[in-house]
Amino acid sequence: MRLLVTGGSGFLGRHVLREAARRGHRAVALTRSPAAARAVTACGAQPLAGDLGQPRLLDAAFAAAGCEALLSLASLGFGHGPAIVAAAEEAGIQRAVFVSTTAVTTSLDPPAKQIRLAAEQQIRCCGLAWTILRPTMIYGAPGDRNLSRLLALLKRARILPVPGDGRCLHQPVHVADAAGAVLAAVERPASIGRIYDVAGPEPLPFADLLRACAGAVGSTTRFVPVPLAPMIAVARVHQRLSRHPRIKAEQLQRLGEDKAFAIGQAIADLGYAPRPFHEGIRELARALGLAA
Image (tube, rainbow, N blue to C red; front, side):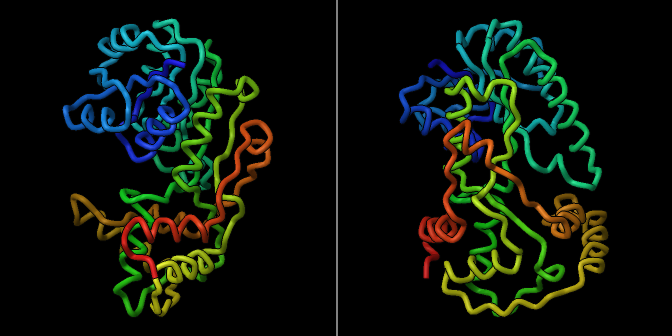
């Protein structure tokens, strides 16, 4: 199958491109910089100049790609969803898989949530044979912005403040499993018109997740619970004072929510079989050179 991919140079995108090549698909990846073009070429895809922020040029790029299906991996939180849908329809692409996020289910109301939900609604109402995937936090290879940092911190920290009581549930998904779900979705007609949560095999209390991470790097870090409210207050001050805050109040607030998702439908329709977290985090520790 000839696939048009947006977001191909991103963390998930690079794994999707490699998996697509492994499965015998031909991928054309939209790129807006020479660096992105080099990245997708290294993953076995053909680069195609284009910019999601320029709808008129996007229509021409989609039409020039000559692809049968679209894999939209670029974040829907930046407001590009309508342009992507319109360009796909204009180019005569019939099949499309869109990657959203389970973050749209949060009880909080950040601006990106409404943008993503509006994009999902437009996708559901469009003329494409669509599928929407909602991954949880993705980890599993150098370059992820979450657990790679945590493993490096655990390797050197003696004491680590932990927001909250550690009971809230988390269900991270390994990047290779998420990439496999994207390709399975575009390959299987049963997924048309469906929305799937893409998560690890089972939810874990945050305290158990931390212990698994510590075990993966042989850490003896002592975890010290800290009330969540004052940490959120400090993060808000940090956001106001910093142009590029390392942590945001919303991220800490999300730690106070359970993030547990049913994956039975993905298992049934996509053959989805995610690896257990303790296996995936050990793979990541080895890839980072931090394994115990």
